[in-house]
Length: 425
Image (cartoon, rainbow, N blue to C red):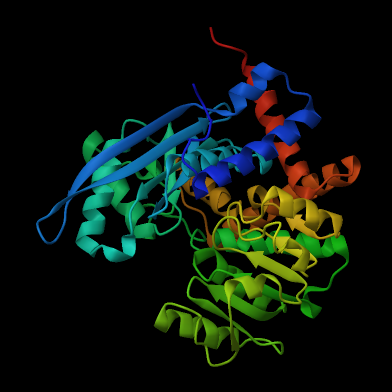
């Protein structure tokens, strides 16, 4: 096993990895884990780095770098998304794989954690180039993936079509259709109903539970959402359906704010037409940084990592921060928010809806028997609310933050599984 030690070169990935390891060690201290168990749980099971050529439309051959990391598979096959982004590096993938282990464990689904990525700018690629890159990357990581070994899913800048290409590529290699090798696929090739908005829906179920715990009436609450991608847009729509007033929304190009409430149908329509919420005529322009500090009851950071830091945490006014993104809050910011009485629903719990419904999709593929959307939503709500209540119980009993409580739950389950399995040989 390779210890998850950060590279010497500073990067966003290293910052994320350091944050994840510090959160792990804080929980490990409280659990009283011995050094051997700590080293093992901080180590990746397998790491694969691949460099592969892709023929561009111009005829030029470009070499891309990709990764697939399996952190821990004690509780089941590895599970985790694949992201396409210019800043993807091995440290980031290590950190996100570790988070996936805890995410699966905190909601008690039988997976370990994995993550993958390709360092590229997908927006600069044609559809043909994107397909070529995806199929070559899938071929390179086929050493690790499989329905019983490691099941990828969409993540940043990847989608159902890309999962379809991976499923087809893997199936061509093994000689038969293997829909269970990925989740988040198109419905026509074994995808699941309810998968597209699962992460955002799970975030909203967590918010509903948090509001109940704090005695808040959602129909009287205001909210702001950072990010209008798959997670953010679903959270915006579903919070609006719950009667919550959305006053601020932003994405990478900018944001919009209206204290009286945004017209969500018009906003999402504008985003669909232009690719951004920036310039929406129904609100005033704001930055991503300004959105985080709006006077709202609920804040959903659903964009990228390290958005709430020691530099701005004291100006965050929300009563509830529900982490739709992975790692949007640093440990220093966590301490500031906790001291102010802000309930932070940590990423490993708040955005677990995606992997929960991915699990449902995988089960349906293995059984070759598909569920209706009502059943999927009902099962997702049951797991999200039950997991939230278990974490709140630990948080209140131990007098700790929600994040530390979630980590205690997750790490404790992985440790228990390891002890029950024993050590081979």
